[in-house]
Image (tube, rainbow, N blue to C red; front, side, top):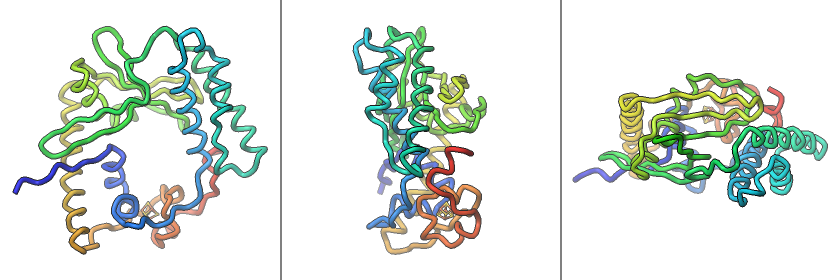
Length: 266
Ligand code: SF4
């Protein structure tokens, strides 16, 4: 019997690669184990992404830096902060981020898509995901991903991202337009790091995605048949930030517990 296509997102594939126990908690266990409290840095990231998406949906003449700040304030997500004061301070910081960033944009430069879902299929996977922004530059599409974390980015982050490569392939196939460039726009510094893929490097990412999908699909099948083995933990520093660490003794031993707002200052 031909195997069913493995339907996934890049995030699902990355979770399998990062930690199989977290994969099981996230995608297989039902009811899913209870997560820890919301993270302030996720609230900040979501608020900024929502504001930028809303900014592009406004009519051209309203797309000003001031409006970006207003949209951010109106949609500010307050979960995860230590208190109202910290939330307010971060709101001010994020407002500067979005108004500073939008001041560098040409509001008439209409993107091809904003928070656009794209997908593609191979003989192994049906993969889909949402692109923050898809631009057209000349004859090519460019995948743009917004980043709000503190860590500075390098071109290697853009080059090695499975998600960005999959988005480039999917966008290109759906819109029948070449797409090789992927960009990370680091909002806190305004820096843009980019990578120009070749057809070959994109193909390598897609084959990698298929390899991961085959492994994960087999594990999913075994799990459905009642075999819960093969979902070993991968303890390491990132366990501090795992939503499921309360259910994972190995993760608790590997990395210290963090408060929901700790990533704002690291
Ligand atoms: S705490 Fe670490 S080892 Fe445990 S599930 Fe989360 S990421 Fe995996």
